Image (cartoon, rainbow, N blue to C red; front, side, top):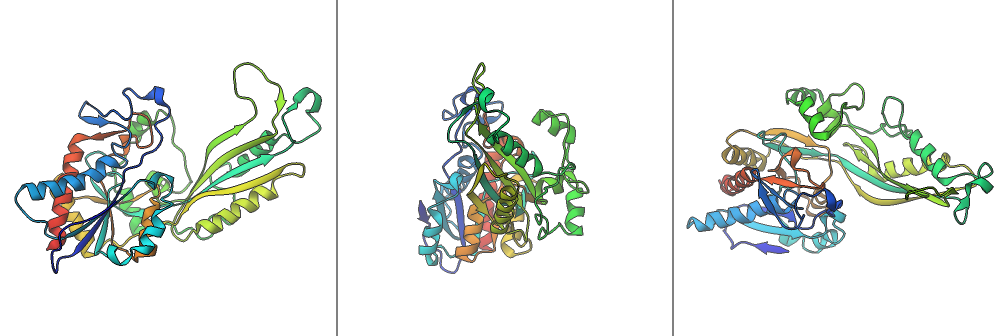
Length: 388
């Protein structure tokens, strides 16, 4: 979807991006109310897409409505770009950006598809981690075998997979892929000091997550580990029999999905190669390993002192009643890379109205209604701040 406001000669252009597709709602039995029937309770609206990203994107539409409803004209030129494929990597968007580059030229791009630093602490995100997302398939015999008849004489694909996955991490939790950290750019000292000044209630976080301990790379703080250091995680495992009762087999195949979050200077294609080399070199003869690239994104850092960024800082202070903090985000927003690549745009304003505990991608996803209204006020203020 592409929309454009009436021309305001000589005024700056703001491109607003959002997406209306959502993650699958599974597991459905963990939702208190149906995921696609929004429910308001306890000051929140609960629904799939409430915070990621329908609710946040909708704030810009309501901000336009508020300005026009007050009898005013929009003080700048707006381009609204919305898509329905963000959650699967925006496969059609790249070609669209390439073909419509000239008509999408703007002074800045605003994207609200993230969160505040904490509830009540608004933030502007200036950094995103990149992503290398791969699937590993280990194949052994042509079909499942009786473990009593054949156990002990052939490689078990499930065991091979587990052995390889176990070798991906060192005992201290760091990534064991040779060369993985070679290009990783550590946060600068001033960034580390800035991150250290951001208070985190670790005990409340552990309660929210339902865990008794947090872990991570030695030598880095919680905030640095979560947003500015590379990681590797197993996202899913399958293979063999997992139903009720017993079925004594050696599975013919087993697989896993693995994601690696990357930091500036790390290149997804290089990390993919390192991963493939590691897996194949640790795969014994008698089984085969297939590595499939599912998704990738470059890490991003955007400038913090541009006029557009200063306008966003003032707008958020207007909307939320306090100045925002500047943060890095641990996740990836692939569209940011596409905008940088094909529109040549560096003025990318990542303005999250939601909260880290909104449960994006999880059951009972929610968006605080007060944050929804604060987002509307901030978006309207951004229109005026950029026009000055």
